[in-house]
Length: 87
Figure (tube, one colour):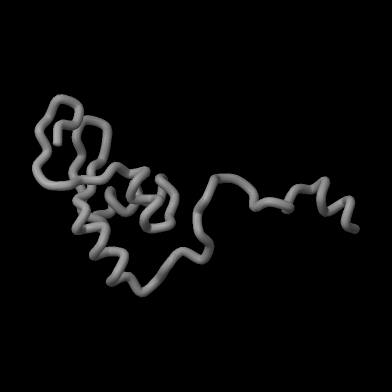
C-alpha cells in the first residue's frame, strides 16, 4: 500500500477506520496511539494502525464503549428545547 508517497507493508487502517471498527471517537484512538496502548505508525501527520492490532485490541479488551459511536455531539433528543417542551 502506498500512503503519502511512502510504501507501507501489510494491511493498515486509518484512525477513522479504527474508530469505526472499535466504536471509539477518532480523538480517543489518537490518544491510545500516543499513550502506546494501541500500536501504530505515524507517517507524516497521519497514524496508520495494522489491521491485526485492531482485531487483537477488539477481542482482548475488557472494556467496550458504552454506546456505539455514530456521530459527535449531543445525543438526539437531549437539547434544551426538547426538555422545555417535555416539561
